[in-house]
Each structure stands twice: as structure tokens, then as C-alpha cells.
Image 1 (cartoon, rainbow, N blue to C red):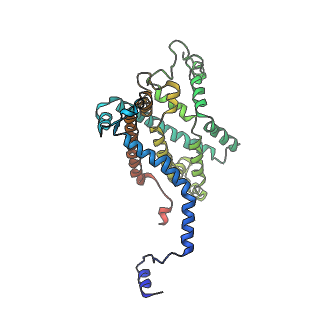
Image 2 (image 1 turned 135 degrees about the horizontal axis):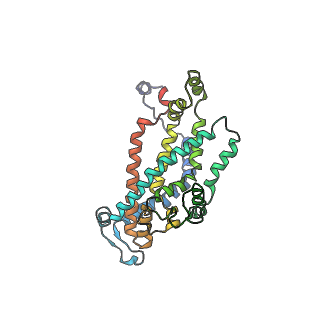
Image 3 (image 1 turned 120 degrees about the vertical axis):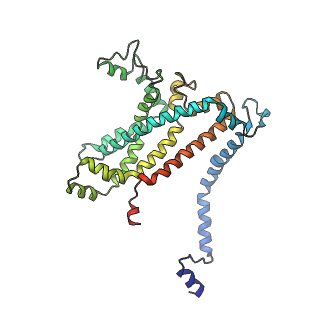
Length: 325
């Protein structure tokens, strides 16, 4: 080792040596193997995103593409300052997210705790049954729920009627036609498909060291204290992952309300999610320039919300490796 290398090593710096032919060959093969992904990312993600950003500055009608003209930031100005439907649809989306996300997280977590219990008989069968709704084709599932929630013949209202409440009569519970019930109705539909979140939580629960529970039990800690002081901190990275994934997914919520109620936003605009409004303007009215603006606006909102969640993670997300760092 030369004097320069010894001095570099003493300073803790990495010694740079000329790359051998073998290293170059390995690097070349590495680029070859990841090239399909890189090509797909460029053609189907990066290039369309760049094109949509360009379209957001155009007055571009799909019916008359030859009349497209550059308008700069006029679409952005229209969306942010002059279009009340944008903010109305954002409010519908955020209100639904604030209702759906906590309920979905709590239900998925406690079902995972139940399915992870050593006292549960036939747990493999129950895990399969709880996950099965996640593999049902989504359109078919939504159409099934349309019948389940039917005011006159749906079994939900029929079960409520057994409790002495007139849920199927003229003044019955209209799950899909009552503006006050719309966010709770779609939350109810969403809970039916929490199988993926249960699976992720279950994987996190099975990664918690058992000796922590044994030590806490010896010290006299009950089930709730073990859950609150051991289980929740140890699986907080998994909960954080579900929060981010759920938030981004709910901001793009589209298919169930579109299948059940179309793009009209009925009743009284309560089902006008942001993506529904985007679909209406971009594909219903064929305003592709304005639609691209709405898409980028949602991207910026989702990015801002995600950054806020990441900024708060240091206060409630616990990583076990931090103790040994």
C-alpha cells in the first residue's frame, strides 16, 4: 500500500482504484438485465408524465386536436382560482379519506391480531376466508354490493328490519342515494376488501420477537399493555407503510363510485370524488389539456400529503435497529 493510500484510509475515505475488465463486464451485464425495466419506465411512465405536463399548458380538445394552442398557465389558473368543482371534489375526497383510512387501518390491524392469535382454532382457514374478497374481480364485487345495499331487496336492510327498524319500506335506508350516508357506504364496501392490509399487518406481527411478550407477561403486563407498549411500536413501520399506501390510493379513488353512480356526482354532488371530476372533464368533455392540469394538481396534492406524513414519521414510527445504531 502506497503512502497516499495509507493516508486516504486513515481519513476514512474510500480508495478509488481503476476498474478491471471483469468489473466493467459485470456492470455492463447489470445494465443489460435492468434495461427492460428502464425502457418500460421511460416509455410508459416518464414520457407520458412529461407529455401530460406539456398538455397542461395547452387548450387541447380531443375532438379538434388540430385547433390546439398554447395557453401557458391559464388551465392552472382556471383550476385553482375559477373552478369551484375542483375544490368541491377535493373536499369530498379528503372527507372520505379521513373517514375511510382510520377505520380501514384499525379493522385490518385488529383482524390481523386476531388471526395471529395462538388460541385461534383453524387460523389458516380464517386467513384464507378474510383474504378471498381481495381476489374477487373488482367490478363484479362492486356490482354485488349494489344488490346487497339495495333499499328494498338488499340483505343489509333486511337484517336491520329484523331489529324492528323499517329499513326496507318507502322511507327505508337508501345507502347509495342519501348524501349523508355516501362516505360511510363506500367505507363499508372498502372494509370488505381489506385482505391485503390484513396480510401486511400479519407479516409485521409475526416479525415481533416473542421474548418481548414473554418478559412483559412475567412482569405482569396484561393483553392491552402488551399490545400498546410492544406490538404497536414494533409494527409501526408496517402501519406507516399502510398509511402512505392507503392515503395515496384513496386520493385516487374512482372505480366503485363510477360503477355505481357514474360521473354525475349524484346525489347532490356527494359522490363527486376528484378522480370522477377528472374523468368527466378529460374524457366526458374531451378537454385533455384541462384534464392533464387536474391530473398534475392531484399529483402535487398527493406529494404534499405524503411529505407531511413522512415528516411526522419520526414522532411515532419506531425502528428496532435504531436502538443498536
